[in-house]
Each structure stands twice: as structure tokens, then as C-alpha cells.
Length: 308
Length: 249
Image (tube, rainbow over all chains, first blue to last red; front, side):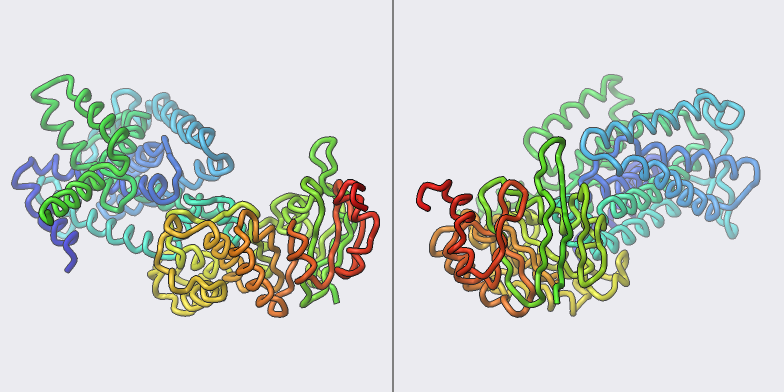
């Protein structure tokens, strides 16, 4: 087995021992969200500043069905993946027409549009109060309302998501998306419909965001309005950049750093986002590849020392 | 028979007629050069042929089929591949991956696009390697682009075009910015490709043009002013005036 896999499995097993299971679950949920964004940001070179559109839409729709129709967890998950992908297809179709700054602003503007729909449509979403009372129905006698079984469920889904994402980035699609990131004009010239491929990346990213959104709603039993707001969109970009957008594992590490800091340090110090800000500045100035690059540089530095 | 033909092809950018009523016929299997002073519209003509730009008027026929207005990514699948005047590769990729991307695009099927590992396409990999071998870069297949010289990048540029297994190759100044030694190497390469592909070549270096071309078309201010064999072109007074400003003629 590869070293990364062993590390990951160890992390999945050890995390609930050192952190509360709810926080441990949140880390893996946010990591799934980050994996989806990273297909766009790291692999295709598209900065989407509207990922919470898909995260929030999926959370609301699946949350509604869970609450009022008592669907089971897997159906909720499937609904979330579908809603995430479908909303991403809608948003993506509009966004991929433009590139650069205009693309970013479009993802942001459409995110705001969804946000205000959720804000106004209080009969369904609860507006500012959020949509509370989302259950975690038992499945085959497993009681997911207990934190630990739910943690097992979430972490298994995280491992599945990671495996799927690894297959995607190692497939021809992954290479084509990177080719688009490297040189859009040439990718078009050798025979790829760049807009279509960007849309495909968007839809896949949306499906991952949707899965994360549903898991999040079930974890906290509520869909807060912020789930579809721009802060959530920003957070996932932030976490992914801190972890390292150039690598498959970057968003996972980013999610860990982000959630752990926000959950543990925030109770000690109300100004904790300051720490994140400092971390972000350090990353942008010195480690463009995030924690993953810092780690690699540290080891190559150490091994070069040992040789002398 | 002409494999690639344009009829009264024009492209205007505002008031500027970059390409103006060009009717050109490229015979299958030949090496047809397009020459002309800077700004004559040669690269614009290429951009029209490959679908990067839509023509303002006129039509393009490929193998007897009207392909006017076909977008660039579809033109590549028809068997029309181009190289660029400015090196236009995938900088973070290895040489092999650069070529692989082009080979996969025009491969027989995209089955497993989302699922199969990219290195499990033996026949795409083989074609990519063959294209690198054609330009003499097979031994550097695993190197990243930034570690090769400018001359080698020009060869890679060519390999990407070849990997698509095209029927017609459009080469836009393949020897741009090369030293005399590198130019000789590249000319030998183009000569080796001659006969295997129909080649349309844009070039500035007259000695190259005269030695490799079967036919030459001369563009000036967006229009064709002459066409013929290298010997005919060399004798043509109008060409000499366009090129040399009438000084040496």
C-alpha cells in the first residue's frame, strides 16, 4: 500500500480519538467540498468563487426531503449529488463563456443570486433562521444520530470521494483539464472543446460540493443561511489554497488546518481569523503550493543537510 | 486533386482587410509554401483555415467538404493540424504528455475518458512516442518542457501537430528564432515529413522556401499576388517588388 493511503487511514482512525467526532466529521466533509473545488482550481485553473451555490442548494433540497418526506441517508446523499451537479451545470453553462476575472465575478454573482433566493424564500429555507430539524435517519439498524456511527459513515464517504477523484485526475480527463490550465489555445487547437470540458469539471466539482452539503446538513441538523453564502465559498478556496491547490491531497490538509483552527482556537481566542489571515499571507508569499509544498521543501532541505 | 481549397476567403478586422479574397488550392501530397512580408495576412489565413477565426466571407473546402465556420476543436478532428509561430505548448507537462494530449484528442475513441488511467492507453502512448521520435526527441520524452532548449521546443511544437495523425499539416514559421544550426536540423525534418503529409508552410527564410517547396503562393496586403513553382516565383517581378521594395529588382 502506498504511503499516502496508510497516512490517510491512520488519520481517519485516529481523528475521532483526539477531536470530538462532530469536528472530525466536519473535517472530512469540508475535505470532500475542497476536493471538488480543487478539480476546478488546481487542475483546470478556474477560480470558482461560488462553490457554496452547489453546497447550499444540495443541503436545502436534501434537507427538505429528509425533514418532510423522511428519505433515507443514501437517497439524501444521491439527491445532494444530483442537485449539486445540476446547479453546477446551470451556473457553469453561464460562467464558462467567459474567462479570467469575468469568470470569477460571474461565479460570485450567481452565488449571490442563489443566496438571496434562499434568504427571501423563508417558507422553505427559513431565511436567516436557517432550516432546522434535519434528521439523521437510521439505516439498516445503524443509528446515525449517534456521533460515532455518523463519523464512520462520513469518513467512509470521504475515502470513496477521494478514490473517485483520484481516478478522475489520473484519467485522460484529468490530463485534458490540466492541458486546458496550461494552455487553453493549444488545447482547443489539438481538438478539445475547451468550454465543454470546463463545464464537465464544473459539474463534477458541483457533485462533490453537493455531497458535502448534504453531509453537512445532517451533521448539524440544520442548513444555516451561511451554507449558501459567499463566506462558505471563500472558506473552501481559502482552505484549498492553504493546503495546496497543486496537489490532490492539498484540500484535505487545508480542510484539516481550517476546521481545526476554527473549532479549537476560536474557543480560546475570538480573533482567530487573524491567524488564518497570517497563514494565508505566508502561503501566498512563500509557499504557493501551500502546506504540501512547504512539507516537500522541508524534507528536501533536511535530506540535503544530512548529505553534508 | 486539391485536398484543401479556399474560395474568395476574406477576413476583415474593422477597416483592415487582413485576408482579402484569397482563392487557394493545395494539392494532396505536396508542400505548398505561403510567403509574403510581415503583416501580409499569412497567419490570419492559417487561423481561418483551422477555425480559430470565422471568415468574413468566402469558403473553405477540405477534401471537397465545406468546413467554413467549423470551430477549431472540430477542425483538428477532420485531420487538419497546425503548429504555431510562437511556441505554444503545455509548459508544466513532460514532452511525452504534451504530445499525448494531442494524440488522445484525435484517437479512435474516448472510451474511459473519466475512468481509465491515462497510462492505460497503449496505442495512444505509442503514437505519442512515435511523434516524438519523428522530430528526434524520443530520448527526452520524460523531461519537462522548461528543461529543453528553444530549438527543441520548436521540434516539440511540430511533434504536437504530428501526434494528431493529420492529413494536412499547417506549419507556421517552424524555424522562427532558430540558430543556423538548429534551422538546418528543422529543414531536414520538414523535408523528411514531405510526402507523408500534405504540408502548408509559412516561412520567411527564402533559402528554405526555395529548396523544399513544390509550389509557392505569395501574399501581400492580404491578397494573393502570385503562385507558381519556386523557379517561377523567383523570376516574378511583382514578387520581387513586394519583397524587396523594388530596390534590388
